[in-house]
Image (cartoon, rainbow, N blue to C red; front, side):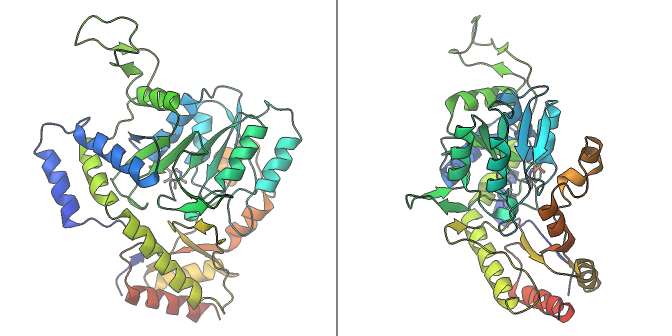
Length: 383
Ligand SMILES: *Cc1c(COP(=O)(O)O)cnc(C)c1O
C-alpha cells in the first residue's frame, strides 16, 4: 500500500486548464477570477457577500480589525482549534479566553460559555469566535442568542466546514457561512481543507458595513469608490483612508478555487460516505466515533476517533504507511499561551480528548480499498 495521509487535495485536469488560462490572460491578480470566485462562493454558502483573502489566518485578522478589536479587549474562543483562531485576537493586542469543549460534539460548550458570561458585567468581553471543529457546524442560532444577550459580536471560524449545515428551530436549513447569525465567517483554502487554492481564504457576511470595511482593509485601506472618497481629482484618484494590508488572493489562485468549488458539494457528500463506513466498521470496537445530532450535516474535514492507546495506534498505523494525525494539541497548552498564564488542568475536557484523539485519513479521493485497509489496521490494533 502506498502511503496514505490524513488529508489530501484533488487537482483535476480541468483545474489545471483553468489556471493555465489565467496565466495566458491579462490579469494575474485582481482580475475577473477573484470576483467570480467570490460570487460562486457566496452562492455556495448562501451569503450576501464574500471577500477572497490571501489565507484563512489573514481573513481572521481582518475580521478582528473590522470589528475594531484593540488593546485590552477580551474575546472568547475554543481551545480545540488551529492556533490561528486565537492568534488573530493577539495580533490586535487583545486578550483571549477559552471555554472548554463539549465531550460529544467537541465544539465549545455553550452551557459553560453562558455560565462564564453570566458571572461578569456586560462589556467584559467583546466577542466570541466559534469554531466548527472537524466540520461539525456550530449551533449558530443559540450562539447568536447568547451574543445578543451579552452584547457581543460573533465570528465563526468555519475553515473546516464549508458545505455543512444545521436545521434551525423553525425547521429551516442554515448553511455554514450564510451570514444569518454570525457577523463574519471565515474559510481557508489550504490544500488540506475542502477547497484547495494553495494558500487562500474567504470571509462571508450579510453586513454591508463590515463587507466594505474588510474589503478596504484587504487592499491597504485604499478605496476608489466615488461614494466613499473625501475628494475626487479624476479617474486616477484613490485614497488610503485607514491603515490596511495586502491580503489579496491572486487570479491564479481564484481560478483554481472556481474550478474546485464546482466539486465541493460532491466532495462533502463523499466525505460523509467515508465517515459512515468508518463509523459502521468501528461500532462494536473500543473506539469512540463522532456522534452527530440529527439536525446537523457534518462537513467532515476530519474524521476523529478516540482510543485508549492513541500513541500505540498512531505508531501502528504509521508502520503500515497510514499517516493519521492528532488534532489538536489544545491551544491553551501551546508554550506561547502558557506564557500568558494558561496551564495544564485548566480545561479538563479538551485535555482528556487530546489524550485519546486521532484523525484518520479523510479526503474525497480516498478509495474504498484504501479505507478497508485502514479499517483493518485499526481493528488489528484495537482489540
Ligand atoms: C486552516 C485553519 C485556519 C488557518 O487557515 P490558513 O489558510 O492556513 O491560514 C484557521 N482556523 C482553522 C480552524 C483552520 O483549520
